[in-house]
Length: 457
Ligand code: UD1
Ligand code: MG
Image (tube, rainbow, N blue to C red; front, side):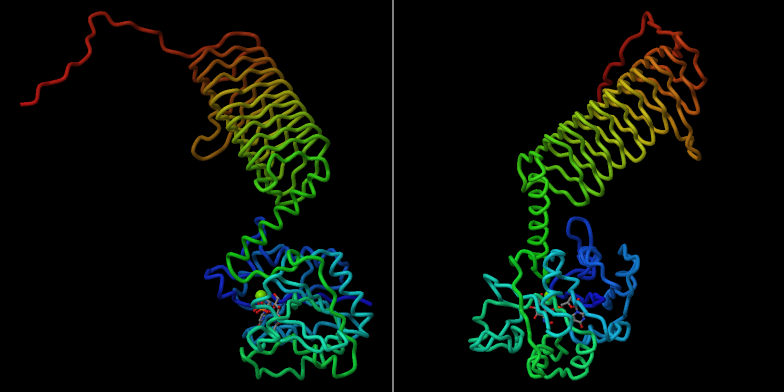
């Protein structure tokens, strides 16, 4: 049966006390709603509908939502009303799977079980879970035989119902045709004056349809995010899940609670990662890569046997085998370091390629540069790539030696094997294999005296 996913994301999230709409609050750097859309995509659904409202266009624009259809719920009259807004676009012969934009950690395997619980539309599938503290959630009310009779919202529940620890996660699967009929009969005579999606359970039960409430494996997977405390809880669960995944692939994490993988990561064998490391976006780490403490790596490829020392930031960089980076290095977008390159303390590299064995070990800026094999860039060297209007390139030939404190004013080419004297400001191309320097003569002035302090009157 084809599946239509409907994601509810129109609510304001008052309890967040934030100007950012709730579903845009980030977990692992991505909006809550993005997590939900991404897991919906794993289901091979025929379409994904997102019901949005609070936050309006801002929500749509903030997401990577290709092939997602948007339905506006102008007024937030409840979860049932929200689903109703999306239903005109869902054909009768589909199974509709409802997800909440504020329940971000549900895994594809669980959704698959829920879909099976809907038995091709012959039953109503509800995903429930046992909660240590069910406060705030809708409770699953079963009769003596254990059959699900209804769901009662916390605010509408009596003492006895509030003692039930099996709660509604919000995820549901049902025949679209039946869902449409039930939604049309919803009423809002309840504690919140809302059209509750959960009331379809009573309708299904009354119509003699089986309600299959299946339990999620753990409450961690189905936590709803309503305030900043829960947001941090979800972040911690996500962090742990990703860290566990990588450790099971053989990565050594000195402290998994101080490691964040936020995007797709691929790893070789025997990778070692020290504390406070953030991997963001798409990152690949080769065999035996070692990463020191306090390192941020975003969208980068790190080859085998690379060492990244403490306090480095890498963004869209490629680092070749056996290279050494840091401590305190910053590799900015389009940096390519070939094998055995060393980039050391307080060195910033942007849009530059350093060929095999090149070294820039101290206090340098290399921007828009090509640095040949085995070049040694002395401390404090700067490629002056910007004239205030345009960016220009610097090319340094293989084997060149750049003395400390050189200013290479681009566009400029340094010959292969050339030596540049320390402190030179190089504005013209320099020949291969020769020493070029640009300095005023050193003077010593006889008879010069230091100024002395004037007495105050
Ligand atoms: C809901 C469920 C509750 C369940 C809990 C799980 C109902 C009536 N209650 O309660 O049984 O235990 O989730 O987390 O369904 N939304 C809209 N439009 C609206 C109202 C809500 O799109 O008019 C969206 C919200 O953006 C959110 C989701 O629906 O993503 C849930 O709404 P929320 O207000 O958080 O419901 P809960 O009180 O948490
Ligand atoms: Mg909620």
